[in-house]
Amino acid sequence: MALGLIVTDLQGQKLDFGKALIRNLCKIISNLTFTIGYIMAGFTEKQQALHDVIAGTLVVKKQPELSPNPIK
Image 1: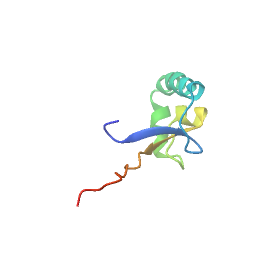
Image 2: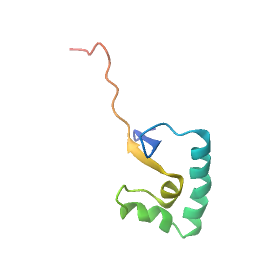
Image 3: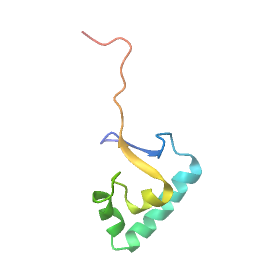
Image 4: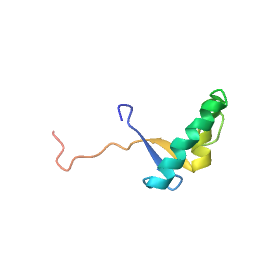
């Protein structure tokens, strides 16, 4: 949250409980591979870690919310 990152599915929609659970359980696999699962994020096309590839998720930067009455 502090970095403005959110996790979405491949279509940009919010995760449902099942996908979020799969993603978090697959983090165990990323850790068991001596963190190679995390390192591979630097080498994949969509910059996905192993657990993101398995779960079909993306980590993206949150779009800034525009206020209806901006201060001038």
